[in-house]
Each structure stands twice: as C-alpha cells, then as structure tokens.
Length: 306
Image (cartoon, rainbow, N blue to C red; front, top):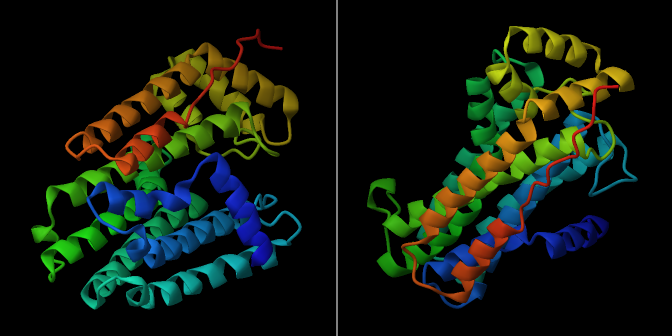
C-alpha cells in the first residue's frame, strides 16, 4: 500500500486529481480545507481502486503497481474500496457533520454502482457497441466518478451552511454546478485516454485490443460505406497484426478523427468553465479552471497508408 501511495503521489504531481474534493469545497466558500480532508481521502481511495480494477480487467500491466500480478492488483483495488468506506465513516473526526457523512456514504455508493454497471457493459459487451451506447457507458464510468469528487466537496460545504438536511431537491446551485464541472472533467480525461490509447498507447493499443473506443465508434458514425468496410476489415484484423493496426490508425487520422476529438474536448472544457462561472473568484476556483487547461490532445502526424 505504501508503494501504491508513492506512485499515486507522483501521478498527482502531473495532474492533481486527488485535490478535487478540497478545491470544490473551498470554491464553494468552505474553510478550512481540513474539514474535507477525510472525504477527499475517501474519494482518492475509491478513484485509485477504480484505476486498479480497470487495469486488472484489461489484463495490462498496472501503472500503479507494475510488479504485481493481476491477482495482487485485484486485491489492492478491492482493499481500497473498503479503505475508502472506513475513512468516510471517520470523516466526522476532521470536521464533517454526522448528517453529511450519512449522505456522502449514499453518494459514494450510488456513483460506485453506476461506474460498475458501466464497466460491466463494457467488459461483457452487453450494449450494441453504438455511438450512443458508448456515451452512456462513458458517462457512468468516467464522468460519474469525477462528478462525485466535486459534488461531495460542495455537499460538505452545504451541510455546514444548512446545518442539516441532505435532500437532493434542496441542494443549492453551486453543488450541481461543481458536479457538472467534475462530470465534464471526467469526460475530457476519457477522451485523452482514448486518444492516447489509439495514437500514443502505453503497451497494447486500443486497436490491437479491439476496444470500442471513441475513435472507432465516431469514425463508424461518420464514415461513408466504403470507408466503413475498410475500417471494419482493418480493425477486425488489428489484433496482434501491426500492419492492419497501422493502416486503421492512418485511416482514422485521414477521417479527421483526431481533430474531432480535440473539438469534443474543447466543448467539454467550455461546459466545465461555464459551470464554474457563477462561483466567486478564489484560488480554488482558479485551480479548477487551470486543471482543465492541463488536459491536452495533440494531433498526430498524417502519413500515407503503408
């Protein structure tokens, strides 16, 4: 666990996602940040658990525990889920109210179940593999966990301000605004992951693994009949076939899929920035806005098909 925490801290230096609940709490007007430290730690454990379980399900080497076998990665991920719950139960010791903790436990459970359902659909291909199905799955698997991160920080602030009550119909606008920000951030991160999985893979690419990722599904929704035949032929042969994989990648580039992904990322960024707009200016709000600018997609070079 200590080795896992060291690796996670190094990743946070590049993209400090573990601070999302704290920044959300502070952006909503909360003080001091220590009051949300327990909730932030619980979310970070849940986030790391999701990453580990996703890596284990994909059968690839874990970026967090590269020397562990799949069984060890699965055990670590499961342990982190229980650690998250244990930390959340004791969040009152660092300032969260008992009423807020009960509500937050329900928020964590709902978001976790939605993410698990999305992962189940992806692993077992229970959806049709359409563009619309992909959007539903990604919203649950990627948007949901990050919406949880920012929502719970805002809920802690609201529980202090209201003094009681957690009914969803009563929540102030800033709670939903920060949840919207987190959701869009999660979708941007998934876009970047799918982009890199095709053009800058770490290990086996999405094309080689025949994954239903953003590039392939978007191309299938936009290409003409001849292009679809060619793309389906190449992608079906892409598994462990470097030549077919390279040709499929080049075809996606020639169909302007990378450009479409960059445009989509900018659209998500605009929605996230609009969600932050009503909040009072503060260092935390500025940090949330700056985080959006750190997620970038660089277009690949276009080359002729081999």
